[in-house]
Length: 94
Image (cartoon, rainbow, N blue to C red; front, top):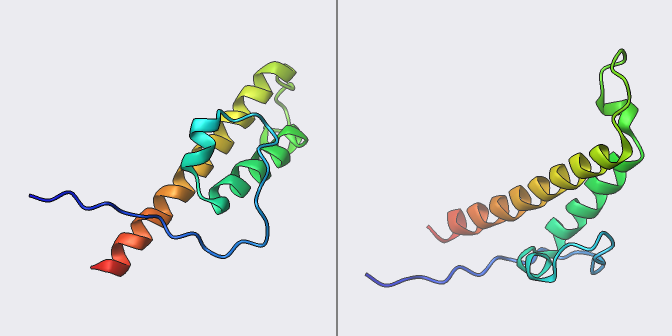
């Protein structure tokens, strides 16, 4: 059985997202530009908006904990974006 190499499509993206939040280079290279932009956007929105995400009666989380939560959510969003693009690419070839 032959192994097929799947190349993720790079949708036209208006700019090359910068690694603003120091994602490890190895991981950053695995994500297409769209996933990189999703990471940056998700992280940026979450860092400054804890009140939007928590229950009104909940106390604010310590800043360090919130930063970790925002990082993890952004990472998951970027991975899911990459996986969706991969699924889409595979669906187009079958």
